[in-house]
Length: 342
Image (tube, rainbow, N blue to C red):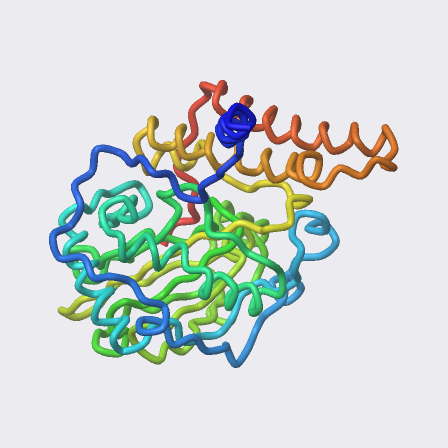
């Protein structure tokens, strides 16, 4: 009997234990004063009063199959409690010393989830993801790429310079949350373009100004409040601060839990924002997790009445995920950072 027990214990070596966030991290030092995240203390989740559909932004049947929801963006709603705002501000101020810049944003910190357990646990919060899933009307998962979690934007050092240019995002869903009170500074508005990506591209290529009636700036209540959107479809920007003061925003990324929806990760664009080794490692994890999600039904829920053709489709879906990732990683072509200017 002891021999059988020993063999049984060895079988545990073959158990799959997939982590949404890696146990390893880049060679980053942790911040010194890191609060402990507690969803019951730091979250104060509320619902937006208004949602906008993809149709409202000018999209039609061309997006069918690329998204499981028609919700494109929302008005402002609360995420953090007063205690949560205090803790998040403390973390963000410590992470400010790690800001970098790129052709779109002059001061941002990425990868902060590797430096702060508070930021990591907030970003991966099940309570938060469930709440956002309700708003977006489809299940969401925190993004598997660490640098797509809790990206932080800080106001430029030059007064009046836009925080971020008109653009669409490198991922499917994210929220933009104010860590500081937007009403304590002049300017700094977050804005949507009331149109599609193609419409914005046409305006930009023609050198035209965006009509004022095509821009919406959601009313922002205060610190700890956010807007949620399908960032890869909604063109948006962050205006410059016109007075002395702080403007800190946090952008947290999500993927659709529905594995029938293809991944949307702009690998080439991320190479222009983060070190190549970080992007490659995180993107590989993202696509490996998606592949595992495709294969999980084959492993855990074997249906002995499933047709051979259905089984082949399951394996083909997983192979497609891997082929996409391999193609991106092997492609040595270069891109410039995509945006539509100020």
